[in-house]
Length: 274
Image (cartoon, rainbow, N blue to C red; front, top):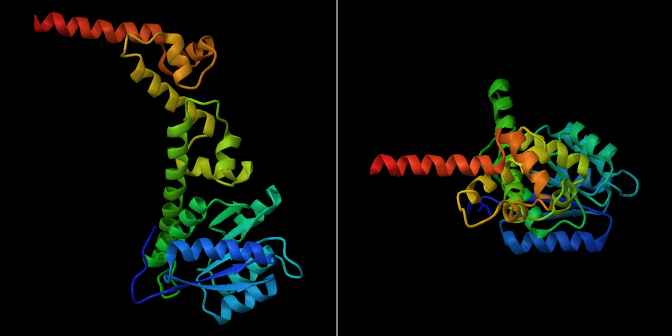
């Protein structure tokens, strides 16, 4: 968790028409940041716009479905007021149209309820990091430098998300996991997760997972005491024939041929030593 300077406190706006939701999110933030953040709460979009301006908030955590002015409409007004506002949506609606709209208002993140404490704090950490490093700053008068700052800020957020994704895959690759599993773990919609994954790794989820499993299989193939079928199972493939096809497509040789090449190289090395 990022620590905020002793002489500064950021105000974060929490807008949700459900009092329990506001209380849960507030409790998570106060637990992790203690007196580092000042919370401002609103019960609808109209209050969100008003309080964001009046209270000099820097981060807006918005529900979407609220009476009167909804979260998307509030975000548009907040963005008009401050082009440097950090907007985060926290909603129960897994709708692609909403995620698309969130992108249009340059939202930093789109989280699904109920969000995990881990994911919420990781997101707020990224937002604070942006503020602390002045990557999003009204005082930046140089437009070209400012654009570079925005890109850097986006990279900060992507790095946080990439770390969470990588850690999940690292601890679950041997299971029968899918894109939906990881998206669900992060409380992302499938559509939004696909987009953010491509931004993080410059490839789709299946390609990344397949390459990760193959690299792990190559390590296991060095141990001749483990047979190919067991290696297949250990890296997440229940069908060893399918594993062999996938491995050959990526490496150009079958697992057995790869193992033999390793053993051949080892034998040659030992002969040279002798």
